Image 1 (cartoon, rainbow over the protein chains, first blue to last red):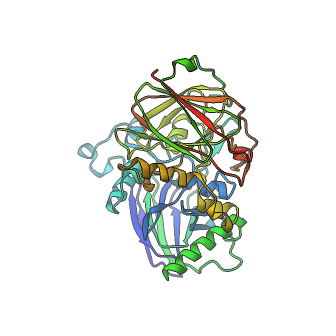
Image 2: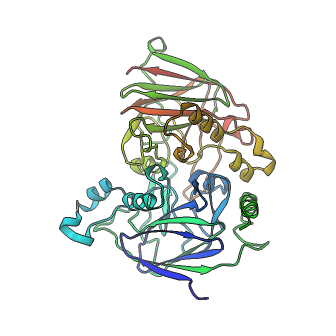
Image 3: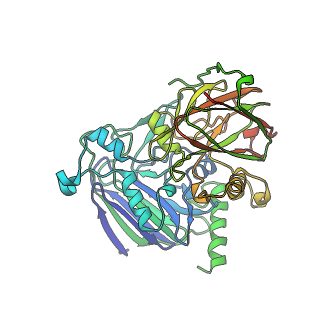
Length: 239
Length: 216
């Protein structure tokens, strides 16, 4: 099936856009070791957003993988992970800041390096948030696609090297109209220097709505009810 | 940092400048001056206290669960943990903790998440998100639902497994357990004493907690 639209998120790139429901957003790591930070908002009500605790506790998980649903703070299924080559994406670690980027990779400025200046996840997200009428108060836990962080018995968080091979893909199916905000910036716990720089292809394709036997809608009874909440929302709206 | 670090406080109750009971289902919102110390006491044991923090001088900079855990490289809060805002700014530090572990991933219950986790019929049950929103409405000012970022759950134990699972374990708190935080800057504290009855986070018996403040 042909993509409706596609782009390549170059290293350090950011993007935001409104995506209708029943679209497949497929991310492909063009090299090994990619990381893309994702925030989701209800396009019709930007105060409703992807909520990490509601998503994780409903699905009894501390990682995100195929079958999982990204849930909003209003109990709705926003997007489902319908394709996943890696089996683990990180919801726990947030994104890099200007301070952490300068500290880890060395201070860089546009004046010195022009567009070689190193971008930070938080600044990228904040710019896109402001672009869409939001701001820093709308920052929250991101989903770090392509990254794996394991928590030990004592709670220690360990970023896993070698998790994402070149060509790895993950795809989200939108269940409602969303504002999608993205930053292609390194994972905050990735120790590699110099600045990890992996381009990521993003394609949007049409997607079939979840059927009765959909894997994500039926992954757990909780997911089923989140879908029911979304269906009710869309039905009341008439979309 | 090891798990279950228990550290007693040197502070005496009689020196506290503020003391108040928060009953289950109620909320509390107050500003701390830099240097002030807040103690939350789990009076009867195994009570979840959903707590959010904001930079009082810049309320858009809320407590960030992810900046906090990534900043310390550990998902659990205990004595020595620094609670950070989204900007990375240090808001508070846990200076005493006789429970030993607090949750950063469980967030607050809400009417909507109750319908997802349990049943649609649970929509009308009281919940922390509603308590938070009522406190924001009473406070007025810039606070709104957009500011309700994922909160800390003091006295709750939600273990993460190395396989990426999330467990809902028995409570590790006990009657009289407390956690003490010292504000590194002027900090707004928002508490909901959790009324949840659908899971064992309050041992199916939500109970009162006490908050105390010392000037140092």
